[in-house]
Image 1 (cartoon, rainbow, N blue to C red):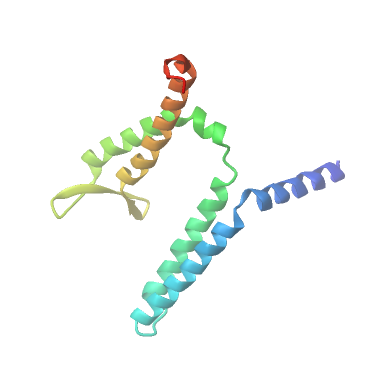
Image 2: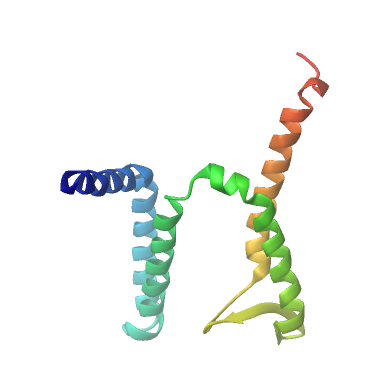
Length: 147
């Protein structure tokens, strides 16, 4: 029993190591560090207001990247229509509860941070159209001209 638990932990760790594209992440890390240096120089040598917020956002996005590495493509494929419906729901919510800044209602406040549902909807539209055209290709495969 203990050996099986140890093997599960080792498999989880090795899956994590191989599921992350470390070359891409290292370039992202270099860009974040360059951005931190630029923000430090712009803020006249003060770390707190700009650089700390930049590093916090980079840490949160890195955690999101590592979580996304474990989501299977088949899961996204199966849930693509639900993701799209959720994005439409968020776009409807922004019309009702959104912040009106400078004459446009685009942002939703959610537990202390605000975001634009239109950005999520762009990704959801790409996902649902990918599934639609994949299914269309499978169903109507005979409609294409042979070269």
